[in-house]
Amino acid sequence: MRQLIIDAAKELFAKDGFDNVSMRKIASRIDYSPAALYRYFKNKEELVLCLREEGHQRFAQMEKHLPDIEDPFQRVREGGRIYLNFAREEPEYYDLLFIKATPSFCSCEKWLGKPHQNFLNFKETVRECIATGVVGDISVDTAVAALWASVHGLASLAATGKLQCCLPDIDMDNIFEDVLDFITIPQIEREKLKKAKQYEDKT
Image (cartoon, rainbow, N blue to C red):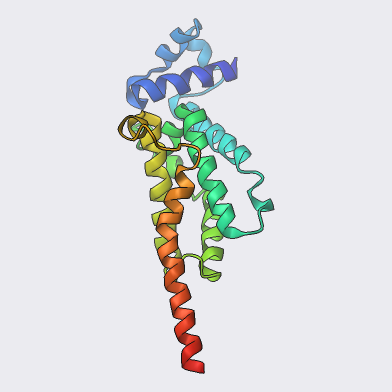
């Protein structure tokens, strides 16, 4: 029953928004009495926080093989594909985790919390990419913001169907890799030029 409540809440929150869904509405969706929901969740805040955690766990499950990829740049590529797939395969969770603002009935501290381990792993991978010179001489935070914004923008456009509508010939299976190449190749070439100049100066 607990999972049935969570699934109903996920669909309703994604469709109608946090503030427009009551515990009564969730109960009605599954033909359950409103009072009975409180046996499983003391209030709507506890329910939405449980939903948030389950979403993060599902996302982490999709990413569990990333540490096995030795090359950090390939790890970024695979992480981008996973992010896009998560948006397509789990649209409600994607919307709740990455699109919707903090619910009015939930404190920002509880909703946002500390950076999730998924994000910390991504940041460390970007740090490794910088160390190997693949994304050039740039701060970790700037690189993280640029890469995250790119894949998030693609995922959001794809989730709404706007990307496919405006660009019907686009290859959805490889779009992130193509965009990643577009972003990083100029950086790679600049790094090559920098190293070539350093070599010339030494000789």
